[in-house]
Structures are given as C-alpha cells and as structure tokens.
Length: 447
Image (tube, rainbow, N blue to C red):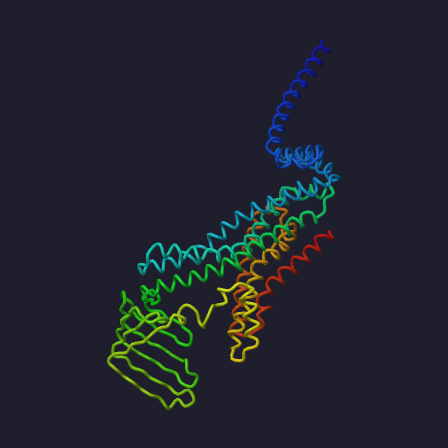
C-alpha cells in the first residue's frame, strides 16, 4: 500500500510538473513570437538565453535571471545587442515621460502666459496659435537636457532598486556596458536638441518676430500695459492707465544723446497706427512738457511746452534692441561669420559683441548639456539609488535642474552686463556637471 501511495504521489507530481511545463512553454512560445523580429539576427543559443532572461525578469525570478545572464556573458552578440538595447530602451522610455513633463512646464511658463496677455487685447485666435507654434522649438530645446537628467536618474535608479544592475555585475558585466548605452543616448539626444536649437529655433524666432510686428502694427496698444514700465533701446516709457487706445499719463526718459537727457511728460495720449515704414506706433500727446537736461552741467536745461505733440515709436526699439538680424535669429554658422566680421569693426560696443558670442556658445552648450547630464546621472543613480531609486532620482534631478538653470541665467547676466568672457559664463555649468560625474564614476569603479 505504501508503494502504491508513493507511486501515486510521484505521478501526481509529474502530472503537475507537466502541466506547469506546458503552461510555461506556451508563455515562452508566445513571448518568442512577440520578440521574433527583435531577435532574428541573433544565433539560436543567443535567442534561448535572451528569452530565458526576459522570461525570468517577467516572473521576477532573480536566480533565473542571474543564471541566464551568466550563460549569456560569453556570447558577444547578447552582450552588445540585447543588454545594451534593453538599457537604451528603458532610458528612452523614461526620457520621453520626463520630456512630456518638462515640455508642459515650459509651455505653460513661456507660451500660455504670453497667449493670455495677447488675448486680453483681442488679438485674433489664429495669430495667437501661430505665435505659440513659432515658440515650440525653444520649448523643445530647453526641455531635452533636463529630461535627460531626470529621466536617466529615475531609470538607472529603478534598475538599481530592482537589483538588475547587481545581477548584471554578478554575471560578469562591467559598468562600461551600461555607461556606453547611457552616453550613446546622451549624444543622440544632444544631436536632436542641437538641430532644434540651431535650425528650427532661428526660423521660429524669425517668423515669430515678423508676426508679432504685424500684430502690434494692427493694434499698437498691445505693447502698452496699464501702470507698467517699458524699457526700449535708450529710452524708458512709464505708462499710466490704458483703456483701448487711450493712455491717461505718459512719462518718457530719453538718453539717446550721450551729452543730454530728454524727459517728456504728457497727460491723455492717443495711440494710433502709423503708415510710415519702420514706425510701430504714433502717440498723440495732449499738453506735453519737454525738459532737456545737460549731463555735463545740470544747472543748464531747456523747457518746452505745447498743446499737441506727436511721438513716433520705431519697430526696432520694441522687437529688438539694435539694427539688423538678432543673434537669436541666426544659425551657428551665421553667428560665427558675424562674430569674425565684428572683430574687424571698430565701432562695436563690448556689450553687443558679448551678446553675439554668448548666443553662439548657447547654440552648443544648451543642447550638449544632455551629454554632461547623462555622464552625471549614471554614477549618481548607482550611488544613491539603492532604496527607492525612482523617487530619489526625481528629487535629485529637479534640484540639479533648478541649480543648472539658475547658473545659466546668472552666467548670461554676467556675460552681457558685466562683460565677462562669454565662453566661460555659458560653459561653466556644463563643465562642473561633467567633472562631478567623472569623479563620481571613478569613485564607483574603485568599489
């Protein structure tokens, strides 16, 4: 009797094992069918090991994952294709999610606020939508570097938390395999961002300025906001209450002449469209008073009063401070030629020259910030991602993004207003990020 029971028990176990095996075989066949196009270039043994590794990951079996990873180590096709493509695919997924997040943030910050201001002036909806479309390249170029940092930190942090990096290391894989995928994705994103920043951004800016001039020319009151200060080239306009095309009070400080300063004060003024080319708007002032001060001798001044005064506001004083094409409307090739030409000219101010050099360096520093962020994200996530790597990656990524953004703005201010070297003002944040990532990687390899 005992022998019979023992045999029945063996047959039951065998039957259960057969059922279990059939189910697993069916799942493996379905999985293999799904991945057949992806694995068609890999040898038969490579297919088997890759299938086993993917199935073990799906069923969360760490031992099976380690087994198939060790067997796959000797196969170069697996090491260079499956694992590298798997890491790259995960990085791209997290990058895309973070890109959508930052795109929405910058879109709301830079586009919707502008649209809201223009819509208050009853600008046609079609013009507003076109203005938004022309601003999209700027939003995309700004979103890519920060999405790289946050997305890569979250992705690698998740791999560390799920012990996938530990399994790869236990199977004999080096950190260099993961680093190659990370840096390759960083370079790919940098090239994409550079194309947006060097071609589509100048085109979008050029079309935006043209359309904006047309919108203002059709309704000049758009540029005049109630109780605000409008700074132009060498002038400052203090605006009172604005109702449609009527302005209650206006004060203009004009310092275009280096030896004299002119102050114009007027009561009610009417804003009109100008038919003259190059003139954006015309202000018909009532009972104006003009005061001309001598800067070298403040005791000398001239005072003029009148019943009416017509003041013309030129286009370049509102759209762009200067003549010709703005540096933002140029490609890197055009900027390089313009900078070489400006070096030979004598009557070029240092502030204007720094503006062009600053914009030229931004064409490269902002897009290729993705590469430096990728270099930092890899060791940082491996060091701090052992527990809840996704959350820590998100926190660290946002903090570093804010610091980087602040450093970039401060660098631009020092480069334009302070006259400091534009190259170092723009590239210093990238160099700091890159050096920090390099030293963290060296520390990681010593462990």
